[in-house]
Structures are given as structure tokens and as C-alpha cells.
Image 1 (cartoon, rainbow, N blue to C red):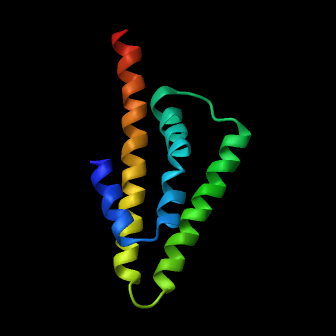
Image 2: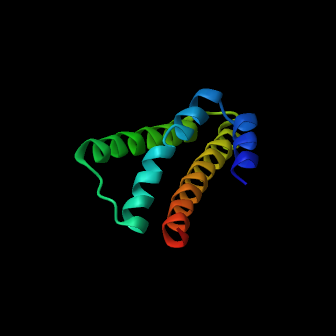
Length: 102
């Protein structure tokens, strides 16, 4: 599913913006690990997560303010965000399964 969404994102939005969102994958994985595995997030990780979420919000707001293809581009960015979250959740759930069935 995430590869499909990434393809749509790359066709709809600029490559740079999509890659910034995809690069936030480890931060989403850290957040899911905190809630699902009980892993502790250190201060640098929390600060990086805040910076990452701020960047994602800036990308969304800048796409809303653009004229012309802003709507299709916004859809592409949303697809990139959903793909990143889905991949992060998949990786964390895989770790949960390995711990459970090992």
C-alpha cells in the first residue's frame, strides 16, 4: 500500500516535499514504539519529532496557499504522509510480532 501511495505522491507533488515527509519515517516509528512497545524517547528524539512535525505543517500550509495545482499537490502530500505513517506502523508491528513469537 505504501509504495502505491508514494507513487501517487510523486506524481502529484514535488519530489523534494515528498522526500522530506518520507524522511520522517524514523520519527513516526519512534512514536509508535513509545506507545506500542513502551520504549522511551530521549530528549533529542522528541526535539527532532517536533521539528519534523513543524516541517510537515509548513509543507501543508504552503501547499494550501499556492494557487493553481495546490489541490492535487496537497493530495500528493497527504498520500506521502499516509504512506510514511503506514510504513512506520508496519515496522513497529513487525517488531511486536517478533517479540511475541520469538
